[in-house]
Image (cartoon, rainbow over all chains, first blue to last red; front, side, top):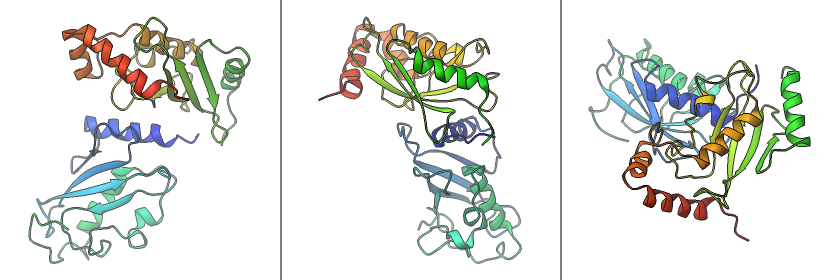
Length: 137
Length: 152
């Protein structure tokens, strides 16, 4: 396998996100349709069923700088959430979130969102007390 | 990284030894499947005097699938969107392994000379183009001056 350059990887991710070819429980796209550098993205995660987050929609910001995908993106929750891997400002803490900590080049924005959703649904997190619905960091 | 297929080596050598007029393609030192490209705007088009930067990548399946190409220079063209993505048949359904990097780049240069607003990618640009072609051409010239003309 050859190494796909950053821009072409992000174009592929964008196309998948735009066409809604990925999982239904998440979505993502460019924050600004004119951003030729494809750096700033936004994403949403639908709260997993059977958890204290069920039916809530969580907005996130994802920053893919020029080191992406060799290095993981920076991920921040906009919607308030109580999770061990998220700090008081909404930033996802890299050492506490395995997908970012053990980042692989083949991962994508979609991987990050799906893995966050899994974390939200995990037995130790799904009953956590959550901020009032709709509040922001 | 796996060895570079002979076909790609040959194409690269020829791009350097026998370059296409008005087009340059330089492979990256880190990734020989990734090229920095420049295309001169055709002289009879609104893109005249502009030098447009593009990037090109040969996926693992190349030449069974088309190269990936994108404009890095902003351009006002009905078949090129805001992210520099290009709507061109030979990059999609009409790709054939008999085509090459050089033929693709020539096709893109030809597309600059012959915008096709009936098969648009940038819908807003295509609409402007169909509504008032003269004005659209003027905007394309302005953008060329602003973004694609080297200033000393």
